Length: 491
Ligand SMILES: Cc1ncc(COP(=O)(O)O)c(C=O)c1O
Image 1 (tube, helix red, strand yellow):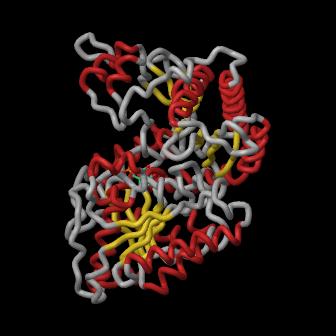
Image 2: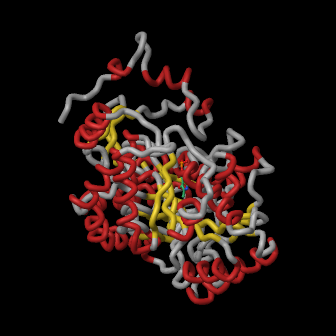
Image 3: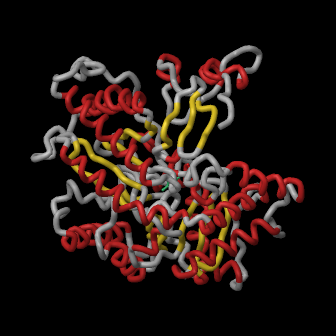
């Protein structure tokens, strides 16, 4: 073990990182006033599946950073050596009009892994949002090349997150993220997500699938079937808490898109690269997409990289049809990030990382399902290393917490217990209040057990506090929401 980094080692001009951050950083989706008050965390180091704060506290990285640190934090030397080799060989050359070895090699590696889904070609961007937006622009051009420039609309789903840049934000179905920036660039209709727990047909998978697909078809017909360009959805939706699709849903989306000439995009920014035990989650649900967007796990958080895979048919106008993809980023396919991506993909295969996920998933699931004994836990859903627990006031009636109560439950009560017990996870209420878990894919059975134990303990304490049997961290009835947007980070 390396010696603990002292805070001073990160200081500049004698000031602590905490002070520097408070005074000069603008944090994502963060109320900086609350940040200044709260004695917030500074993370200085990672080790295995844990991160360590400047005060020497260890936390299990139960969300893999933001669903991306799939290898945890101990592969930095190996990945760093590959990065060093690349920087010493060729730090930069663009992928505009020319190519270079790491981008070409990573493209081939990705296509090999996505070939069973019919994918044949890759475009690289630098993030998930850029990947989604780049895919949208290809879709628009593809329709235009096929004589249908009037296809300008999109279909996405409510509470889904597809990024914050103005194009991708059009597809994001979270009102808080969108409201300040409307009207958005792409006219988009948002459908119900695959949220069985509160859907009237949720207990009957066949009826549920039918209802969701009927809703999708109605939306397409209403928008004008010859005007809809793209339908975008995550195989397992993150926003709202790990909504797994019912059987037949993806084949049904595929059939609708075929019927009405719509391009089907699977946004696998989170679900690709082992999160649910496969290279691509799309391989589990049938109904092959035309495009798969990816990011996060492609480098396991070691560098910013995203992109999209496309079928030969989607690529054809730009490869053999004389059309040019009118899009680009200076750092698309950057030698550094693609060299890191290729190394990470090799590690996934070499170390049997997805076998680890598949092997331990039943134990993870059984442990989480057992937490239904706590009355606060209304639903437990997810797959692989991607789970959510929905929290309710009354399990029998599924009675919801009010917005203020949920704010208290998540941000005062549960967050204090998770902090004390040493687990980083997401406590979110952009839909209903959920505890979201997405641990590194290299987490072993003992760590998964610890995560389940901590979640159980925190949920029990919160339930007791709610019922007044122990002193709550703050009285929910006197708590007023401090900020216009008190919600935790969005990605
Ligand atoms: C499904 C999905 N799409 C897109 C994005 C946006 O990715 P980024 O934050 O890299 O722009 C995210 C981020 O979490 C995501 O979960």
